[in-house]
Image 1: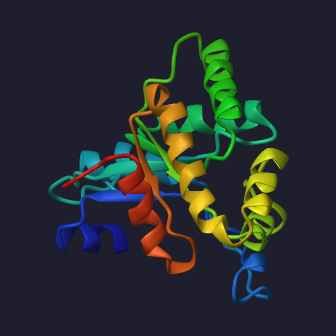
Image 2: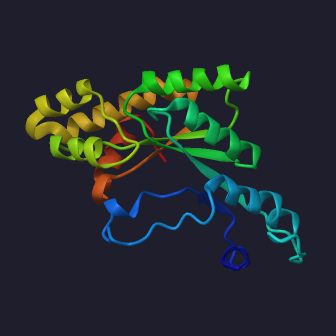
Length: 212
């Protein structure tokens, strides 16, 4: 019902993801709701609603026309499991993927190579790589230690630590380097401003020489 209402109001693009566990949010005692997996929800939207039927097979009138993005973690410790989840999302109709913030381009490249080994073909799904500029050692350590799915390599932590008061500037350099190193393997990138620090996102864009 919510999806049909959203479509009626003109919404066409959806990002389907599991979300972070409630234990790391503002309400750690709340219960997580896992009634349906992301891949299953993608299937309902693309193979049901977009074909004019609901989950039970009943006609809904005009079909929806949603475009679906899914989540991807190219730095997952268990890459084979992550690839299996990604394949399910692709087979169920995902149109593109947004990745978790990448801090190790080599690891991301290894993930893409492993996908090709398992699937027997390169990953054709458009990927928008997540990039988060670091602004302090404390920020980097928080992401590394507290946020599931994010691992920051020791070399990056050391660069931020050595930068001292200029850590935010170094974080911008690191982010722009990551984009350059991954540019040939992805279809685009999206910048995640840490804790509302939108100026850092703007600085990354400037460092990349992007105008408009």
